[in-house]
Length: 273
Ligand code: PZK
Image 1 (cartoon, protein in one colour):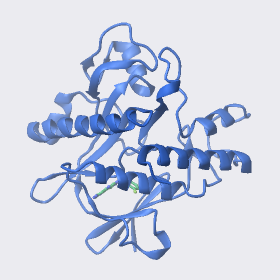
Image 2 (cartoon, helix red, strand yellow):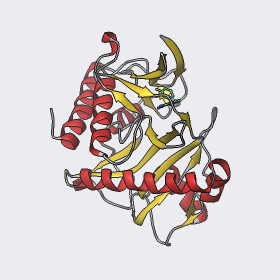
Image 3 (cartoon, helix red, strand yellow):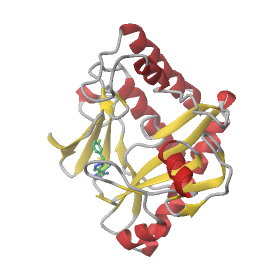
Image 4 (cartoon, protein in one colour):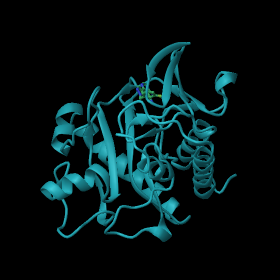
């Protein structure tokens, strides 16, 4: 199969007119891929993404099949429709963290949306906001205002993107909240069918695309403990590592604890083992 795109932790192959998206067991911390895989991570994230696609009925998506994939990738690959991808990272935020927090601290706005004063690290926003960014080929994604999105994709697609992004976030956050999990933010990608139909693509509401916090531990005013990679971040923070490649090898006990967290997140969100 022809390799179309290789990301930090996933690969995309062409199979006839379809694409096969394959999630690896690789993990990145502070944007650096570590040399030790987390066994089962690709499977857990793929199955979680498929579960969310199934929950989000009414939002057209690129999934053709989670099972009709080459045997060697079974469980961690998705057969997808090939779309014309839109050059916008569609982010919805319900809480303040990461780059959203940095932008708010500097300007009181995120992607041109003004937020009320007095918010801090981990604060819940009055309502979820659409905070798109560019999809930079290299270097860092930059915030885009809604008007900039409209300039790039046209006004009617921009309106659809904002509506669909906020709908996916709201439905995901509501479902997760019922299971004791806060989804602070999420990054979505969309593409178009040849007839112009907007389709949700890529992966959905996984720990590689979203911030998950335990609702019982949420405490605005300080950095939140994220459910998935926090264990790896805490471990790596105690090392003498400058956060530049190559990353450090992960010891077996830290691999096992990280694996357990991914499985726990999947079980909590989906109610499946
Ligand atoms: C597409 N990416 C991101 C990068 C990955 C994924 N349905 C689609 N049609 C056309 N292109 C894409 C998709 C999807 N999804 C997604 N780049 C192109 C990406 C690296 C590895 F697995």
